[in-house]
Length: 132
Image (tube, rainbow, N blue to C red; front, side):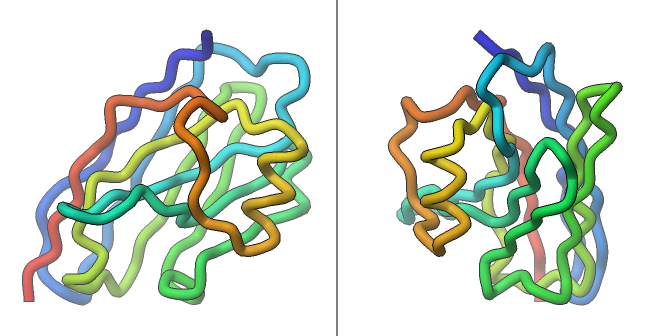
């Protein structure tokens, strides 16, 4: 099973920035994309941003478009999420998710932001707290 380790969370004021990182132990055969989810207290875990392994296809959930940027360094199996102009509603636990197969990526890219947890391996999460 792929091991994922996230880092980079913290507490910032509204308008601030954070950069999340995710280190993966490996890419398994059939991995098509990977990305970030977040879960606020009392809410479902929702997709935030995804990138395919080739790096040419990226998808953002509408609330973060124009503020968040996903990127990767494939040979180092590193995934990043640069978060700018943070808002209090961005407060959540952020999770890296991989590997995501073609069917799961197609769902996510179609705007289905919620997936069954057994469709991916998950990191332990990193907390992002944005105060107003």
